[in-house]
Image (tube, rainbow, N blue to C red; front, side, top):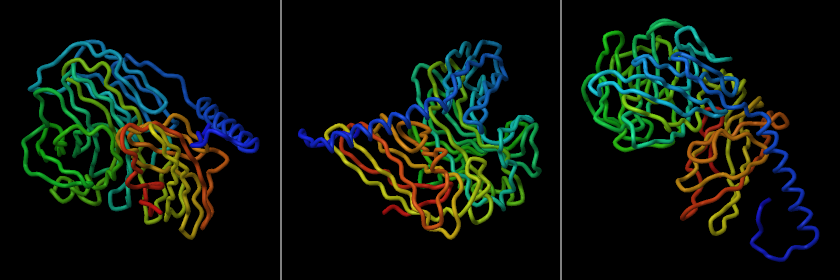
Length: 378
């Protein structure tokens, strides 16, 4: 129920509040029924599918010690991570979630591999949970190859290190500093014996972020480690642990690859114009808020299936929502349509909302992306 700043309410106001509560409850029950039960994987290369479009993999290859992960509806967490390997060598595993193809296992409905020259945007979002009693990095793995291969090792690997704990470092050596996607990174370059590796290391831990994978792919091209006629084969996010790792988690993950100028080609977003504007109306009180979000399709063709990506400011957490399915409740959030509001006609609108808590001064998200295209905030 959305709280009111007034203590006294008319009978009509109470009835309206009750109806709002019932609608919110129905939306939450719909979301809960759609969520899958958690799945635990202990097989070294065991996998499962989440959200009907991403693969979660255990991917333990550097040690014989046990490792188990639990896949959730929006990501995964490491529940057991025995053993350790020397920090001056390779990690013991890469538990991760991905869109695309990895050793012949392609995620459902993916449009990868896709030629870089044909990709307009490749929006992705992530929310991580970290621990301090382990040695690890939290990183994206982005794979590029001259051919549209779905198996084996690709020619170039791009790593984005969101966090590292312990005396570990990327392959190769530091070559420069660069600003990519509006953030500063230390850039490393090297080769692990089977492929080139280009790494971007954050100066401090990043817990959540929404960004365009193509910003990093273009860096590889500009540095001579890929060409525009090469293929993007997979977008992966997870952890490389050297010692321990239990408790690390990907809270939420999303990845889309839009080909052509209209932003179509995402298996979760069949297509249509994605020119858009977003109105974010709020009611804020001490320790809490509601947000009513209205998406307007300002394009000339309808949108069939939508995902709106944004990042909640630090200290905010969603407690319930209506008229949308949410990938997470803090940090990087992707709101996606429900069955009754999947279509946005040209010039039309859809609305959804949520209630949340806030710690400290309230702020609105700084930007919005609809099906991979930036929207105008109004």
